[in-house]
Structure formats: structure tokens, C-alpha cells
Length: 458
Ligand code: PEP
Image (cartoon, rainbow, N blue to C red; front, top):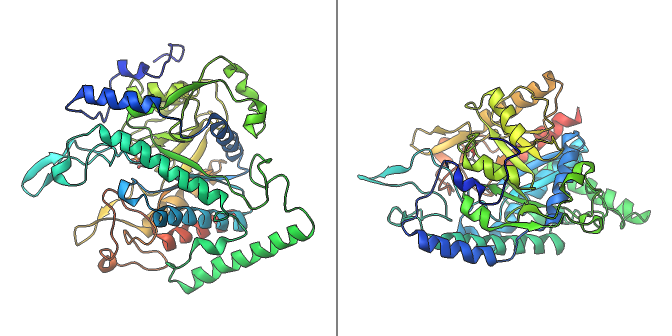
């Protein structure tokens, strides 16, 4: 594929597509997509540019990227309780890092759009019947009798994303996310006494620090958040993301905008941005950050074609099947100008270096699935930590720096074994809510946060 070939939001349609969904009624699909194409964007170009700028800071190892949330969101889980629990968990995790490692954290949730799932097989056996695999709430239903892809689910995904994002935005602006009130993020699900104590110790220290700032009059003005200029000390930024899998949907929400003005950007302009001062810059407005999954990164395929043309910062999953040369070729296609903050490599193992300016983050979850004695899919906390620790060591040995972590997290779920709560095989069934993939719970997530924070403290 040549990077000089002209690109437009539908140019992916001339390429072969992996993980395609076959809709029985293409006219129905077109009608739904036309409707989505008229609906407003969910995120704005200036927010997307702000994230790009902040990821450039992560790339210089001056901040840490936390990419976390559900493996797959479900429409039913779009409730106040679930959304605030997820945001609370991500904020608690990032607070531990900020406090311990003294590193600013860029937070990207796998939230407000993460509905589609790639599957290894088109069909699966349920009982005696072979049925289409469940592909996520935006495609078909978990119920084996509801597996025919239904385009209306894409519309429903748009509205569930909108509702979720609206609630996230209101939580962020209503004080819930303020660093002044971290105790609101709830430690109800942390049973480990020492973990609670450690977190409470941080919260007390933070309250003192904020009190001190107030006393000496630095409570308002430029934020200590990345990029500055946003407002008050203690406010946080938060971004959304999903796997860019359903290209019809992505295309419908890809919109041309002029490059944001300096006033809209609220962050210093990217020095390499001059080349995009052209009349049309295409942004995927369904989320701030999108990633290319392990199963859809064929160099000449539709997904790479789509991703090369959007201005959003993107992630690329790098698994054992990706060769080093292939990875460099992929980077040449999606980031030909080698722009900072554009590409985040989400590894599932330690990998070599390419000379490309990328952010390396570790996904210690997706390469570590096993089946428990009782037949439940699970992951072992110890194995997850081994991969993360190894990744930190490999980066240190290569004079590189791990820039972040990508985690699938639930709240009070019991889906992964071990951690400081020592979740056993017998306890797996207690709150095993996953219909697709396995998540760390609140307590196990804090364990990971302390591990990373202690690593960077050294
Ligand atoms: C995911 O992150 O949800 C996922 C499916 O990962 P991968 O593409 O690495 O399997």
C-alpha cells in the first residue's frame, strides 16, 4: 500500500476486510449508516488534538499512559452505578501512580464505544448447535437465539456511547473526579487491610498537599494536568477509546473539520501540524483514541487503510504473530511523517525497536488466558504481573521506557485468579460476569497500580 495513494473515509472498502460482519439485509444497514452519518460527533477535534499533544509527552517519558476499562461494554451495563465505578477505579489507579511515581497520567478509558469484539472463529458450538459467534452488543446478542447481525444495534451503540459519554462528562465536571474528593471513588470492594491503608495514606497526603496549595494561593490558574490552561488544580482529563473494528460505523462518524485554531486547542500546537493546515482534516468523532486489534492489522487490508487517514492518535496491538519488519512497514503506513503522539504500540510481549517515535505500552491481559479446572476461562494475576514486570525489564535493558499499561478492569468481578485478595478457583464463580473476556477487579487493579508506582519511584 502506498501512503501517497489518495485516502477518503470509504477508501477501505476497496480492500479485503478481516473480521467482516455479514448483514442479511444490506439495504437496512445502509439506511442505519445514513442515519448515523447525520448524528452529531461525540468528541471534538480540539479534544483529539489535546490527547495527541499529551501522548507526545508520554512518548518523552514525562507522563504515563493508563488505558483501561472493559474488554467489551454491554448495553445493559450503561447505568450510573457501573459508569461511576469504572471512572472511580481508573481515577484511583491513576492517583496511585501520580502520587507514588510523581508522574502525570494520561487516562484513556475503554469506555463509551467499546462494544465490538473480534472473534477467532465465525461460529461456536452451544449445546448441540453451531451458532454464529457473539460479536459484541453492537452486532448481535449474547443469547444464542439472537446471533443474526442487526444493523439497528449500531444505532443503539451510538446512543449508548452518547449516554455513557454524557455521564462521564458530567461526573468529571461535577466534582466526582476532583482530586479534592478521592474518597468518593469508593474502596468498598477492597478487602485487603494493607491495600486500603496504603490508598488512604495517599488520599490523606493529597488532601494536605491541596490544602497547602490553597493556602499559598495556587489553587486556581493553570492546571498541573498535562497541557495546562484547563482550569483548576485537581481537575482531571479523561479520554475515550475503542477497537476500530466496525469500519462502516467508523466511516459514518468520520468527519472533516478544519484544524482547530490555537484558541480551541488549549494545548501548544504540534510543531509538525503545519502539514495539516489543509482545508480538510478527517477525525473519527466516535472516540478520542482508536486501536487496531491483533486480528485486523493486515498491511494491505481495510483496517490499516482506514486508520492511515484519520487524525486521531491510534493504538496498534503487537502480538507474537507480528514480525519486526511488518511492524515497521505498518508504522510507515500509519505514521509516514513520524509524528509524536500519533502511535501507541500495545504489546503483549517485549519487542525490538524500529526508529519510529512510538509510545510503548503493555497489555498483560490478552495473551494470558487459561481455563480453570471448573471450565471457566480465567487469567492468573501472577502471570499478568510476570508479563508486566518482564516488559518493564526489557524496556530498561533496551534503554527504552514503558510508557503505559492497557488493562481490562471490572469493579467487583471475580474473573482473574490471585492478587492480594488471593482469589481462588472456588471463588471464581462468585461474581463472574464476563460474557467475553476476563477483567481484573478493583483490588487487583490497585495491586497493579502500586507495582507500577513502586517501580517508577526507584
Ligand atoms: C482487546 O484488547 O479487546 C483485544 C481483543 O485484544 P487483541 O486484539 O490484542 O486480542
